Length: 231
Image (cartoon, rainbow, N blue to C red; front, side, top):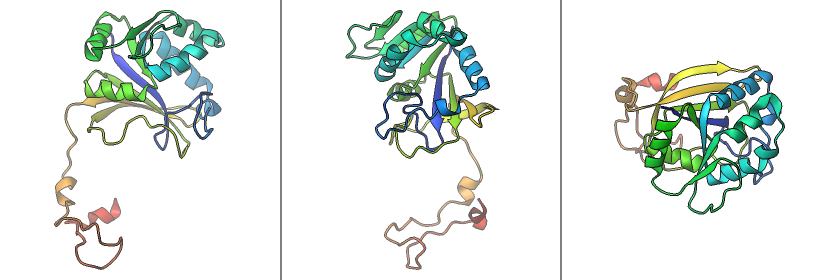
């Protein structure tokens, strides 16, 4: 049985859009390629060769289906990606043109569970922000790998949408690459973290949002512990 592994490139401000030469609304693309190093490349090659299938949302799938069939053959990565089974979640894509592609149109939870059961390796999810959100909410993600790039982009699509439900994760691994990129590996956690500071630093009265920041007018809340000044 395979695991479902979400693997992402992300900037320090949480953007995952256009790490390669795909379109970015402000032209801020290729930010991941500019810091690529040999050890990063080896990690991604090993990751793909350990996979049994790839699962993508429609937009990411169409970007990949344009690039990978004619991509450079470095280290056999393109051949491996093209040979793997690909699954795209879409209700609008009718005739996928990329080889070894199957379309998941409904019953996402059931289809992904069956895919994991029959896979001999990891099922990798790249990009595909909306799909990742859905997979987390359905408790289908086994591991989340974030390659965090030392760049602030200032605009672009984020991995997680605003106003989503809370998801807790547990850090299970870290690695630093020669470029300064950090790999953070997480597993979902069913339990929320706890700390005595939650109680000791709780507000003693409701916050008055009409009070100007730093002002002396009444209604400002006061924390129970002065330790919050040193955090």
